[in-house]
Image (cartoon, rainbow, N blue to C red; front, side):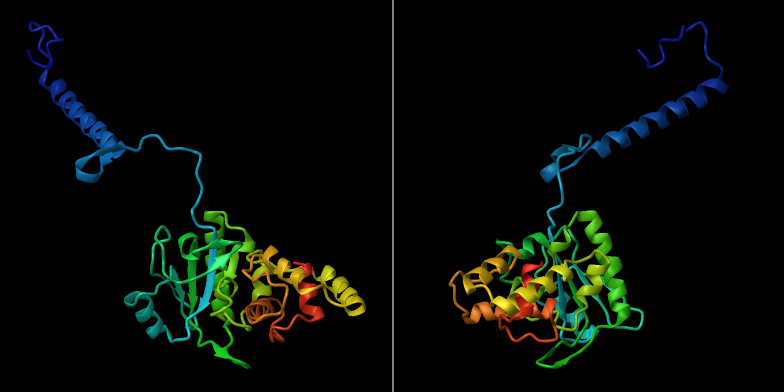
Length: 279
Protein backbone atom coordinates (compact mmCIF):
# COMPACT_ATOMS: atom_id res chain seq x y z
CA UNK A 1 0.00 0.00 0.00
CA UNK A 2 1.38 3.37 -0.97
CA UNK A 3 1.24 6.61 0.98
CA UNK A 4 -1.40 8.04 -1.33
CA UNK A 5 -4.14 5.33 -1.26
CA UNK A 6 -6.49 7.93 0.22
CA UNK A 7 -7.03 9.03 -3.38
CA UNK A 8 -9.06 6.56 -5.53
CA UNK A 9 -6.97 4.81 -8.14
CA UNK A 10 -9.53 5.64 -10.81
CA UNK A 11 -9.02 9.40 -10.27
CA UNK A 12 -5.30 10.11 -10.71
CA UNK A 13 -4.09 13.57 -9.74
CA UNK A 14 -2.65 15.73 -12.49
CA UNK A 15 1.14 15.88 -12.55
CA UNK A 16 1.00 19.66 -12.02
CA UNK A 17 -0.63 19.07 -8.62
CA UNK A 18 1.29 16.04 -7.41
CA UNK A 19 4.73 17.59 -7.82
CA UNK A 20 4.10 20.70 -5.67
CA UNK A 21 2.23 18.57 -3.11
CA UNK A 22 5.11 16.12 -2.87
CA UNK A 23 7.63 18.95 -2.48
CA UNK A 24 5.55 20.69 0.19
CA UNK A 25 5.10 17.43 2.07
CA UNK A 26 8.82 16.68 2.09
CA UNK A 27 9.61 20.24 3.16
CA UNK A 28 7.14 20.00 6.05
CA UNK A 29 8.65 16.73 7.22
CA UNK A 30 12.13 18.26 7.08
CA UNK A 31 11.12 21.33 9.16
CA UNK A 32 9.36 19.09 11.70
CA UNK A 33 12.48 16.96 12.01
CA UNK A 34 14.58 20.06 12.67
CA UNK A 35 12.21 21.21 15.41
CA UNK A 36 12.24 17.81 17.07
CA UNK A 37 16.02 17.68 16.87
CA UNK A 38 16.26 21.10 18.56
CA UNK A 39 14.06 19.93 21.45
CA UNK A 40 15.82 16.60 21.91
CA UNK A 41 19.49 17.32 21.42
CA UNK A 42 22.20 14.70 21.85
CA UNK A 43 23.66 14.34 25.33
CA UNK A 44 26.44 12.13 26.73
CA UNK A 45 26.98 8.92 24.72
CA UNK A 46 24.13 9.77 22.36
CA UNK A 47 21.54 10.28 25.14
CA UNK A 48 18.76 12.51 23.82
CA UNK A 49 17.86 15.34 26.21
CA UNK A 50 14.55 17.11 25.73
CA UNK A 51 14.93 20.85 26.31
CA UNK A 52 11.48 21.85 25.08
CA UNK A 53 10.29 22.68 28.65
CA UNK A 54 12.19 25.33 30.60
CA UNK A 55 11.70 26.13 34.31
CA UNK A 56 10.95 29.66 35.51
CA UNK A 57 12.43 29.06 38.99
CA UNK A 58 16.11 29.90 38.58
CA UNK A 59 18.62 32.73 38.83
CA UNK A 60 22.26 33.46 38.11
CA UNK A 61 25.06 31.75 39.99
CA UNK A 62 27.02 35.03 39.79
CA UNK A 63 26.65 37.14 42.95
CA UNK A 64 29.83 39.25 43.04
CA UNK A 65 31.99 41.29 40.66
CA UNK A 66 35.62 41.71 41.69
CA UNK A 67 37.75 44.56 40.33
CA UNK A 68 41.53 44.30 40.02
CA UNK A 69 44.51 46.15 38.60
CA UNK A 70 46.99 44.11 36.60
CA UNK A 71 50.37 45.56 37.75
CA UNK A 72 51.50 44.90 34.18
CA UNK A 73 51.22 46.24 30.64
CA UNK A 74 48.44 45.17 28.29
CA UNK A 75 50.73 42.77 26.44
CA UNK A 76 52.04 41.22 29.65
CA UNK A 77 48.57 41.09 31.17
CA UNK A 78 47.12 39.23 28.20
CA UNK A 79 49.94 36.71 28.32
CA UNK A 80 49.65 36.17 32.08
CA UNK A 81 45.86 35.94 32.14
CA UNK A 82 45.62 33.59 29.16
CA UNK A 83 48.69 31.37 29.51
CA UNK A 84 49.29 31.01 33.26
CA UNK A 85 47.30 29.56 36.15
CA UNK A 86 45.53 32.84 36.79
CA UNK A 87 42.70 34.33 34.75
CA UNK A 88 39.82 36.77 34.71
CA UNK A 89 36.62 37.01 32.75
CA UNK A 90 37.44 40.44 31.34
CA UNK A 91 40.45 42.66 30.76
CA UNK A 92 40.18 46.41 30.10
CA UNK A 93 43.26 47.83 28.38
CA UNK A 94 44.88 51.24 28.98
CA UNK A 95 44.84 52.39 25.34
CA UNK A 96 43.30 55.83 24.54
CA UNK A 97 40.19 53.94 23.42
CA UNK A 98 40.27 51.00 25.84
CA UNK A 99 39.59 47.59 24.45
CA UNK A 100 37.68 44.95 26.42
CA UNK A 101 38.88 41.35 26.13
CA UNK A 102 36.69 38.50 27.35
CA UNK A 103 39.11 35.78 28.37
CA UNK A 104 36.76 33.40 30.19
CA UNK A 105 33.09 32.71 29.54
CA UNK A 106 30.89 34.06 32.35
CA UNK A 107 29.50 30.56 32.92
CA UNK A 108 32.99 29.31 33.74
CA UNK A 109 34.97 29.81 36.97
CA UNK A 110 37.94 32.12 36.41
CA UNK A 111 40.92 32.05 38.77
CA UNK A 112 41.24 35.67 39.88
CA UNK A 113 40.20 35.98 43.55
CA UNK A 114 42.24 33.29 45.30
CA UNK A 115 41.66 32.77 49.02
CA UNK A 116 38.83 35.21 49.66
CA UNK A 117 35.62 35.86 51.57
CA UNK A 118 32.75 38.37 51.43
CA UNK A 119 29.74 38.49 53.76
CA UNK A 120 30.90 35.18 55.19
CA UNK A 121 30.91 33.48 51.78
CA UNK A 122 34.29 31.84 51.01
CA UNK A 123 35.76 30.91 47.62
CA UNK A 124 34.61 34.02 45.76
CA UNK A 125 35.94 32.60 42.47
CA UNK A 126 32.95 30.26 42.38
CA UNK A 127 30.31 33.02 42.53
CA UNK A 128 32.02 35.96 40.84
CA UNK A 129 33.02 37.66 37.64
CA UNK A 130 36.54 39.08 37.65
CA UNK A 131 37.49 42.26 35.79
CA UNK A 132 41.15 43.20 35.43
CA UNK A 133 42.05 46.79 34.52
CA UNK A 134 45.47 47.49 33.04
CA UNK A 135 47.20 49.70 35.62
CA UNK A 136 50.69 49.46 37.12
CA UNK A 137 49.38 49.77 40.69
CA UNK A 138 51.78 51.17 43.21
CA UNK A 139 52.72 51.34 46.88
CA UNK A 140 52.64 53.92 49.67
CA UNK A 141 52.08 57.27 47.92
CA UNK A 142 53.24 56.26 44.40
CA UNK A 143 50.07 55.07 42.71
CA UNK A 144 49.10 55.24 39.04
CA UNK A 145 45.74 56.84 38.20
CA UNK A 146 43.10 55.21 36.03
CA UNK A 147 42.11 57.00 32.83
CA UNK A 148 38.59 58.34 32.53
CA UNK A 149 38.25 56.33 29.33
CA UNK A 150 38.90 53.12 31.29
CA UNK A 151 36.30 54.04 33.89
CA UNK A 152 33.73 54.93 31.23
CA UNK A 153 34.23 51.52 29.59
CA UNK A 154 34.05 49.82 32.99
CA UNK A 155 30.72 51.54 33.71
CA UNK A 156 29.23 50.17 30.49
CA UNK A 157 30.52 46.68 31.21
CA UNK A 158 29.34 46.71 34.83
CA UNK A 159 25.90 48.02 33.88
CA UNK A 160 25.42 45.10 31.51
CA UNK A 161 26.73 42.48 33.97
CA UNK A 162 24.64 43.79 36.87
CA UNK A 163 21.49 43.83 34.77
CA UNK A 164 21.95 40.32 33.39
CA UNK A 165 22.89 38.69 36.70
CA UNK A 166 20.85 40.80 39.14
CA UNK A 167 23.89 41.75 41.23
CA UNK A 168 23.48 44.08 44.20
CA UNK A 169 25.79 47.15 44.32
CA UNK A 170 27.01 45.93 47.75
CA UNK A 171 28.64 43.06 45.88
CA UNK A 172 30.72 45.14 43.48
CA UNK A 173 34.02 44.86 45.32
CA UNK A 174 37.76 45.27 45.03
CA UNK A 175 40.25 42.47 45.47
CA UNK A 176 41.34 44.21 48.66
CA UNK A 177 37.78 43.96 50.06
CA UNK A 178 37.61 40.18 49.74
CA UNK A 179 41.28 39.47 50.56
CA UNK A 180 42.45 42.36 52.81
CA UNK A 181 45.27 40.38 54.40
CA UNK A 182 47.17 40.01 51.14
CA UNK A 183 45.78 42.32 48.42
CA UNK A 184 45.50 46.10 47.89
CA UNK A 185 44.08 46.35 44.36
CA UNK A 186 42.42 48.27 42.82
CA UNK A 187 44.20 50.74 45.14
CA UNK A 188 43.41 54.16 46.64
CA UNK A 189 43.14 55.99 43.30
CA UNK A 190 40.30 53.85 42.03
CA UNK A 191 37.20 56.13 41.72
CA UNK A 192 34.64 54.20 43.75
CA UNK A 193 32.51 57.30 44.32
CA UNK A 194 32.12 57.73 40.57
CA UNK A 195 30.82 54.18 40.24
CA UNK A 196 28.53 54.69 43.22
CA UNK A 197 27.07 57.86 41.69
CA UNK A 198 26.19 55.77 38.63
CA UNK A 199 24.47 53.16 40.81
CA UNK A 200 27.25 50.64 40.20
CA UNK A 201 28.77 50.39 43.68
CA UNK A 202 28.00 51.06 47.33
CA UNK A 203 28.65 54.35 49.10
CA UNK A 204 27.91 55.73 52.54
CA UNK A 205 25.33 58.29 53.65
CA UNK A 206 27.48 61.42 53.90
CA UNK A 207 24.97 63.27 56.11
CA UNK A 208 24.94 60.42 58.63
CA UNK A 209 28.72 60.19 58.49
CA UNK A 210 29.05 63.89 59.41
CA UNK A 211 26.66 63.39 62.33
CA UNK A 212 28.58 60.34 63.58
CA UNK A 213 31.86 62.22 63.23
CA UNK A 214 30.65 64.94 65.61
CA UNK A 215 29.43 62.28 68.02
CA UNK A 216 32.76 60.43 68.07
CA UNK A 217 34.78 63.63 68.37
CA UNK A 218 32.79 64.53 71.48
CA UNK A 219 32.31 61.13 73.09
CA UNK A 220 35.14 58.98 71.74
CA UNK A 221 35.12 55.87 69.56
CA UNK A 222 33.16 52.65 70.13
CA UNK A 223 35.15 49.75 71.54
CA UNK A 224 37.08 47.53 69.16
CA UNK A 225 34.63 44.64 69.43
CA UNK A 226 31.89 46.96 68.13
CA UNK A 227 34.12 48.21 65.30
CA UNK A 228 34.95 44.64 64.28
CA UNK A 229 31.25 43.75 64.33
CA UNK A 230 30.45 46.72 62.07
CA UNK A 231 33.16 45.67 59.61
CA UNK A 232 31.57 42.23 59.44
CA UNK A 233 28.14 43.82 59.02
CA UNK A 234 29.29 45.49 55.78
CA UNK A 235 30.90 42.35 54.37
CA UNK A 236 34.50 42.22 55.58
CA UNK A 237 36.10 39.20 57.21
CA UNK A 238 37.72 40.38 60.43
CA UNK A 239 38.75 38.68 63.69
CA UNK A 240 36.40 38.72 66.67
CA UNK A 241 39.15 39.54 69.15
CA UNK A 242 38.05 42.88 70.58
CA UNK A 243 41.58 44.25 70.08
CA UNK A 244 43.32 46.17 67.30
CA UNK A 245 45.42 43.29 65.99
CA UNK A 246 47.30 43.33 62.68
CA UNK A 247 44.52 41.52 60.82
CA UNK A 248 41.99 44.13 61.92
CA UNK A 249 44.34 46.92 60.87
CA UNK A 250 44.67 45.34 57.42
CA UNK A 251 40.89 45.28 57.06
CA UNK A 252 40.62 48.90 58.21
CA UNK A 253 43.29 49.85 55.67
CA UNK A 254 41.31 48.18 52.87
CA UNK A 255 38.18 49.95 54.06
CA UNK A 256 39.96 53.33 54.13
CA UNK A 257 41.46 52.82 50.66
CA UNK A 258 37.95 52.48 49.32
CA UNK A 259 35.99 55.05 51.35
CA UNK A 260 38.61 57.48 52.70
CA UNK A 261 41.65 57.12 50.39
CA UNK A 262 43.31 60.33 51.55
CA UNK A 263 44.66 58.42 54.59
CA UNK A 264 44.79 54.63 54.83
CA UNK A 265 46.96 53.82 57.83
CA UNK A 266 44.68 51.14 59.28
CA UNK A 267 43.99 53.15 62.43
CA UNK A 268 40.38 53.47 63.69
CA UNK A 269 40.06 57.25 63.77
CA UNK A 270 36.78 59.15 64.20
CA UNK A 271 36.30 59.82 60.47
CA UNK A 272 36.83 56.18 59.48
CA UNK A 273 34.41 54.82 62.06
CA UNK A 274 31.86 57.54 61.22
CA UNK A 275 31.92 56.39 57.58
CA UNK A 276 31.65 52.75 58.70
CA UNK A 277 28.60 53.52 60.83
CA UNK A 278 27.00 55.42 57.93
CA UNK A 279 27.50 52.62 55.40
